[in-house]
Amino acid sequence: MEGGGETGTAGQETGATREARTTRRKTGSGPGRPAPALALIAVASVVAVGAMFAVWAKHEILDTATWTASSTELLESPPIRDAVAGYLTGQLLVAADTYAERLPEQLRPLAGLVAGAARAPLERATSDALGRPGARAAWERANRLAHEQFVSAVDHGSPLLTREGRSVYLDLHPLLDDAAAGARLPAALPSLIPPGVGRLRVMDAADLDRARTAARLLRSLAIALVVLSAVLYAAAVWRARSARRRAVVAVGAGLACAGAVVLALRPLLGDLAADDLATTSAAQAAVRAAWEIKTGLLADIALGAIAAGTLIAVVALAFGPRGPARGLLRQRPPSPG
Image (tube, rainbow, N blue to C red; front, side, top):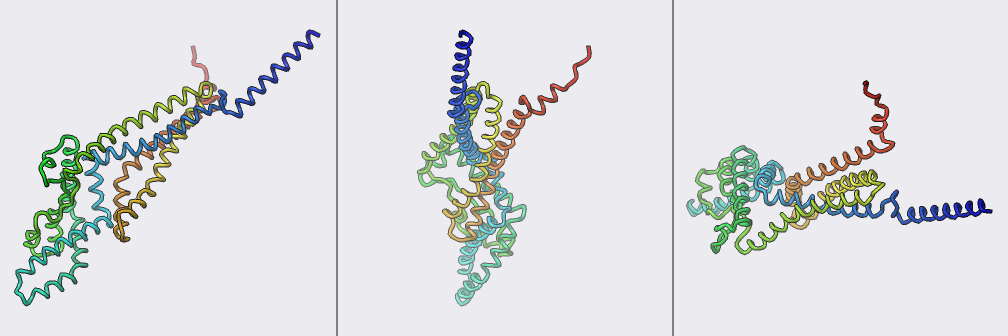
């Protein structure tokens, strides 16, 4: 009788144990399936996506070396070079009108007709001229100077913006000389263009406060999101307890997925920017090309996340209880002595 009672008690305990195990399996809260850890990994991966965009934006917008390097690549893109050539051609034709005023009165109407007919070949010649080293160097100097002024204004309140009517410009006026020379126009033609022509305004004094706030927020986000993502990943591994190896595998997979999401969003956001900023097909092609070049660093960051996440997952799997690395370690012969 006593033995039967013990057997019954053992059976009840076994049933209770099975019921508890079943409950843990359904809820995913047991040590074998750490649902809270997986939830933390999912949140961390979402944060990691935002962190990648924040780090990219911080370096691309606020770092002069990065901005200048990517801007130099812009002029090597045919759609962008054609767009810049079209803009410079328009400025040269304005100068040509001024130049035509010096001609005899009876020849002035002909000058307008010639200018209209010459626009297309002039634009092609200007585009070819922009591919030469001198024009690329002038473009690089213009972008570096504009960005240095922008960063100085945002970080230190440059006096350039504290005086009424002053702004930060991307000054393309020096490129007009290269364009005119490449198109074999009269050497005096660029000198007829007013100094303010060919200068694209980047920021004025009214934009300074907003730019400072945005820069501070961007710098803070770039640090905070990276730290938050790392903390959440670490918390997930700690929370997994006996399933920590599987949690590490999930961390690697989550980081790799975050990088893949960034790569997938990159062209979609480029299409949205092109549709929003441009109205013609040529302008949309230029915007897409500019977005692809300017987000090259973002693609590198995403690919780095994919590589790091894959490496983490592979290493965690390889050194698991049944992993090949653990098996090799077990089969290693003992050292002599």
